[in-house]
Amino acid sequence: MSDMKDLFLLTDKQIERHDTIEALIPRFKERAAELDEKAAFPFENFAELKEKGLTKIVVPKVFGGEEASLTDFLLVQEQVAQGDGATALSLGWHNGVIMQLRETEKWSQKNFITLSKEIVDKGVLINTIATEPATGSPARGGKPETTARPIEGGYEISGKKTFTSLAPILDYFIVTATVEPNGEIGEFLIPKNSEGLSIDETWNTMGMRATRSDDLILHRVKVDGDAWVAKRTPGSKPAIPHGWLLHVPACYIGIAKAARDEAVAFAKTYQPNSLDHPIKDVPEVRRKTAEMDLKMMQARHFMYSVSKMWDDYPEHRPNLSTELTAVKTTVTNMAIDIVDLAMRIVGGHSLAKSNPLERYYRDVRAGLHNPPSDDITMMALGNKAYDS
Ligand SMILES: Cc1cc2nc3c(=O)[nH]c(=O)nc-3n(C[C@H](O)[C@H](O)[C@H](O)COP(=O)(O)OP(=O)(O)OC[C@H]3O[C@@H](n4cnc5c(N)ncnc54)[C@H](O)[C@@H]3O)c2cc1C
Image (cartoon, rainbow, N blue to C red; front, side, top):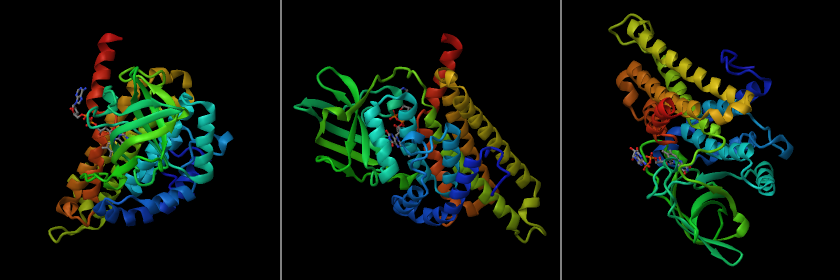
């Protein structure tokens, strides 16, 4: 049994998954620099995640999964991110989709069972692709310019989506589209080999490069009527807030943990000749380390307190919306601060391309632009104070 110092590992299953992931981490770390440099998708990491069953953890037990709780899911995210942030964020989108479907029951039972079985038996991967050049973040309520035009027996879908994380490996794309002529917003399930569907390899960002969040091009893609799997009302408050989206801050605090550990390991061994001891004994290094750990504790206690409330008191879920957005904002910003402090401890060495800290610095920054962004959280909190 490993790392019993982590107070958040409370069940045998959580410890078992932790040990499983721990064995993957060294290989994920080893591959991370090259994948980042080439902006290449982590295919090998995903083969290993599938092999260890980590792409089916949230599938209900009756359909062959493990029915992981939100807390279980976040623990996995946080730990995978310590090996490779891009792998963790990508895994989180996939598992988050399944948890959303499980908790909201927004798909027909038939469609959900079919997908669950494909995930369990064939290891299929899925993601929601909702962002477009014109709408920007779907969290802000923009209406898709991608259209679904009724044709005999189904729909013809055309448009362009951006930020298609896991683009090279997805089996299914859930695409939002405005349905003609009435203007409803539909979510359409589109298989990867559909005629007219292609990926435009535009993804060339400073961080999270290995997520391959490319553009998705849909040129008159024909789907059956039952591909319209759910409806959306942009800008409306969902009946159940998006608890599963906490996979995002869990990923970024995992990256921060990797940065913190890197800095502590460095401080234990680095000894310039101006000192007769390693820099770990410099008071300012200890103070910065304490600051990192204080933020880490605050972030994790906040995140897991809210996830526990979500798991243990389902009746509270409709009222957890501001807590969830507050966790995203707090934890992501603390993750950025922790990486910053780690780099200040390590100093100029942290800037080297050969040092993982410079990648953590770029990756963690992407968290600001995953939903919900800080301004949305602040608006929600401000409105709650005055309008509710
Ligand atoms: C690594 C990564 C992976 C991603 N993966 C996916 C994915 O798999 N699927 C997916 O659908 N999306 C994905 N996204 C996209 C993400 O969810 C956002 O849609 C995207 O980052 C754009 O967010 P934004 O807030 O910058 O957008 P924009 O809406 O373009 O906003 C840009 C800026 O304009 C201002 N602004 C815009 N609109 C408003 C408004 N209405 N009110 C006030 N201010 C406004 C804000 O200052 C904002 O920062 C991913 C993003 C990243 C970074």
